Length: 202
Figure 1: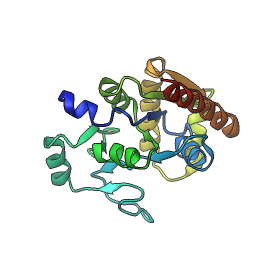
Figure 2: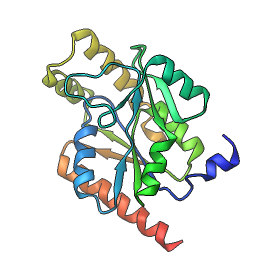
Figure 3: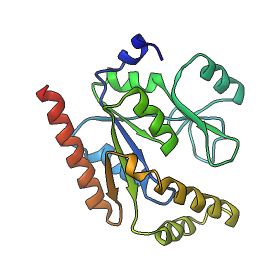
């Protein structure tokens, strides 16, 4: 990335939220969008996977063909992108999503995996990185099974990925345990309030 590109979004505060499947990321994000002490724009991820029932392009994801995704990769339009969970599907965050947050005078919230978080930090070292977890791997498994949406093979693959992701948790600036949803949201809100005050104090 060139110097001019890295400066393009220098005044856009970025929050990265990661955590294994079953850690409750989506629910936490929904609560933060409703009640966070700072204005937040959730970056919409792009993906090559097909939409699931009820999913809307440009709302839940930007659904791109593999060819279009590759063209955008080659043009350097992604902050980060990776093939995820061994499925053959690609996911990524477009730089235009950071611009959308900047235009709104808001924080950009990226709900991405550990690979993506590392790539974001390389470009935006001041990003607030938060790793969301539960008390044990057994709790992840219980939540995954409670969804009732995935095969046994998929559950085992996600549990394997969860163990791998947990090994990267110490690389994050903050770790938040989500055994109590309200408490987890309050803890993240406090982190954002503190960082927002630091930004305005500069």
